[in-house]
Length: 574
Image (tube, rainbow, N blue to C red; front, side, top):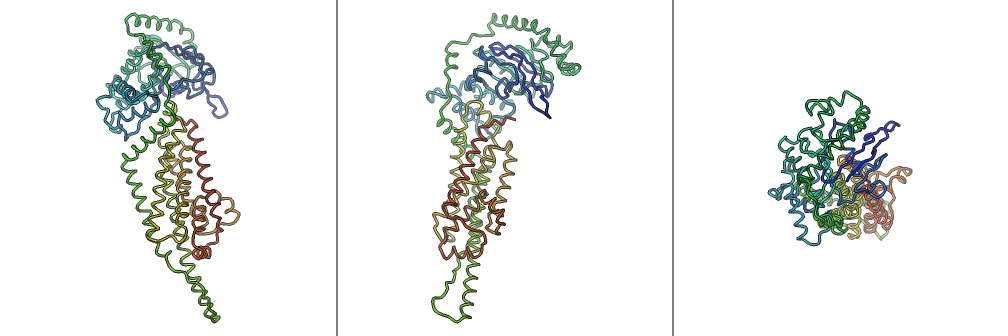
């Protein structure tokens, strides 16, 4: 049984406490199908999230099978299923792949046979078997709702919470979903709570809970709804609610709740007698209690495999990555000829004063020409790889935040999720950086320690990828993360000091945070002495030792990953 005792959820707004859910008390027995209805903004979704534990109750207590959830811990991931308003599946995947990934992330199966059995069972229950090979992006609204249910049923939850799963559907699809939820409530004593704005098909529910401005106005059998509110049709209930303050409706309900509770108990007794409430077998109860989550490596492998599958099926993303990898090195090589010129050396023989002056002018001219070209090409590579890093990860977490939050609620370990992202992005970083280094070197040899230069290109790409991944994990939307990442890359060139030296007081403050500076400085330090001197002759910015550059970029990566971890762990439900 699920029981709420005077449960409230309050937020702070303009210095005052505003109750979004106010003193709600209900009892829901096993095998019960309940609708939560009410006008827009009345607190339906807030109440559902409070029951799920996503909103910590401000007052009152919630009990599940006589267990105080506030004191003894929240639901275990296998006990509860939550179907939100948004889609919880990736468009490029098929129905079968989506359900399989959900099963692998939530259920520790003994072998492949058990895994296949669970997948086939939920596909059959939700009527998705005939379309299991279709991609999510081609499904209708009703089919996507069924898929959301299927992905929750893989762990056989005893409490299923559905938030507006019938919104936006045509009448036929809506009735099919409500009928499906009704049937699911009759299996193994499962409780199904469905938030809906629609007042259609109420006869399929065992009880109706009506909220008005966060307060309980009614909870009783559907056939008593119009009688209680003294209306002739259910469509008149919402206008009727608006005629009185919510506090008055709540007080009225407190006086009549016992009589309506007895009506529901009587109806339930009749249904039990008619066999509409089958008793769940003991083995099913035992199985649900022993259900365990998969381990870290199992979740990691599932996430990484899914990420690569999504990547290769997104033709736009694959084309963009190929275009970047091919075009960016070509852009650099266009200017490589200017960096391959000779730098005159001073003559060892004694010359006239005029000849020495002319020689100095020629040497300085060579140094200025070659030094500025080499410095610019190195910075060009660094900035392009920074841009690649931003493109790699700016949307990586923020773009799928709702799905990630839902999977985390279902038992996904943030550590496994973050590790899968790092592994996927590491492959992109290594491929992009080494290809850039080798391609440019093939058409214009790097005049120094090539391995060291390639290492710094790899590090700056990794640093910018990690920083933008951190931004992606901390922002609420992909648009915010992308915009901030673009600004970050845009400031790399002017603040690095490679083009124009910054004032010392500004340089000392900004330099530690500019990845482009450390990669550019480390690569310049790897140049041959004569080429290094040529670069030094045309820049005013001081250079740092190679070891310092290496540790600075390593620190950028480490700090960014820590920030990513913090952002990934923090709940960010809408």
